[in-house]
Length: 353
Image 1 (tube, rainbow, N blue to C red):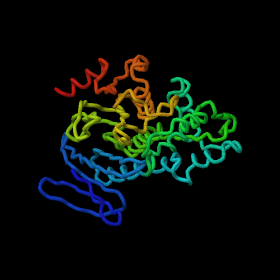
Image 2 (cartoon, rainbow, N blue to C red; image 1 turned 90 degrees about the vertical axis):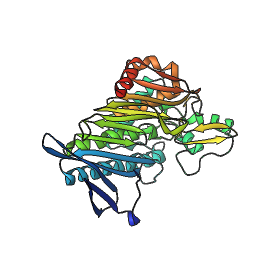
Image 3 (cartoon, rainbow, N blue to C red; image 1 turned 90 degrees about the horizontal axis):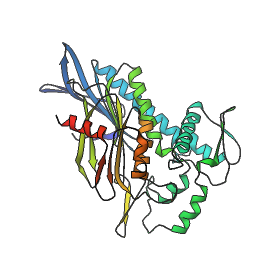
Image 4 (cartoon, helix red, strand yellow; image 1 turned 30 degrees about the vertical axis):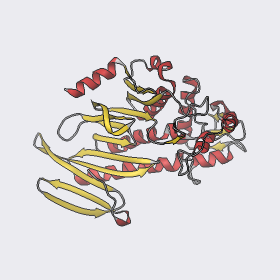
């Protein structure tokens, strides 16, 4: 299916009623209703909406008995993702995290409960995984530029990266739990929540859909997915893992419900310089893109945890697999070899039946 925005950012909504098509124009997102199914004498509509947010495309598909209710639920879910972007993006001067980055070394900055909680959990991950997940990579992401319109296009400067690493350490962040303030202990520290914010946004969008009475849905945010309930035909949602060297192909598929499937890969944002691939997933200990993986996928109960764990698996590879404690994972290493555990193999095999 092709998705094309209308002029003036109007919505295109399609309702496919057997051989007839009804077209409606409204607001600023594209909506699609792909199918209508009758289950137990109750008609259910399958609708989709997408919008570019947080540097990637978010696609929501819902199944609901009411077109209007389903449509509005998707609208508010996408608004919630946009709201989170306007809190966590350090590429917008007006966001809360940008204010923190500008002022937290000068004085303690009072945080909203939401951002205080997100940063607290981020630091917990850093402590748990020995700093291989670290939100103070801001100076590195700025240098490499993969989250901007101007990624690096020359050989990286090893001396410059070594200098920037002096500002990368989660221990330079001080949180005061008495007054919900944050301080930086070193000048030049900068938080980048890109490694966790998208997962958090997926979880929050899922909550919005459920609160509006939608329990059957799938949200895809740039390859990180949360699936709830079932499709309109009663089957589980089908999620695929891309071939990192040929994005048109899938290396595996699985059927899922009420779970997140999160993937980190070196193929979404990268640059080939003198025959070497540089990408946006950094090892915070070296300052360079992690070299040991092409793609890593984990299946977890929520996407905030999922995006963190998939990045850790990508960065640490064989050094980290034993710490997943039975969480399904699927890794393609730097040589293109596939490594997966028994629980993931079972999920993939069941999806083939």
